[in-house]
Length: 232
Image 1: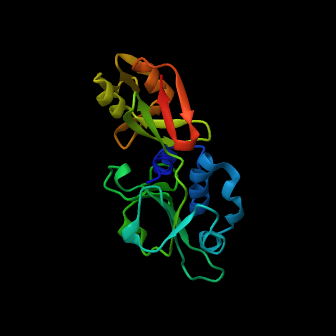
Image 2: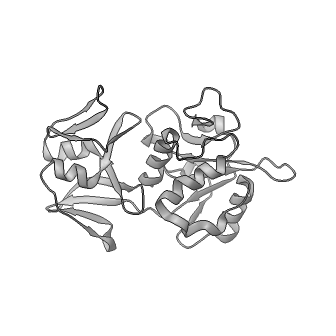
């Protein structure tokens, strides 16, 4: 599972910085993963979703996997399908699976803007998305959050420098209260306000450093070799 991509794909629906124009599906998907990986995979860029899918298959950059069947889908996988038109077009989306808890399986930018979340961006089920021709799995940059040898949470990388984690995981690990102030739209963890938190399908996520500070651990270190964030 790539929590970072899945969470970004949901947040991107509501973020005006992510492309919301009709028919810009592959641009939206690219913006989701490039916010984490930067230009690492820019060699696969192309004009249409069909061409991008072909590039992923022909180039398959190091640590990228092409998944053979939809039964193997994991949250954070990139989905592409061909429309077999001339010139070739296609469609692209991000599989969010259980991360979404919305009853939908994918986020996308589509060919219409009616009844969508923002512009042409919105949710669909897998059956609504239709046949999948190419499934791309990027290497996960997620990390574990640990304290004193105890696993606290799984953190997804949402930008090159920012990890986010679910607030309820910190609340459970440290036995502290957590709530979402719907009036002011802020997270309250251990009686401390976290204004940088966001709701992702009714789950509160916030930067790991903010969550750690709220439970009394202002110092962090990152063990890059083991993809682990340590609280001190």
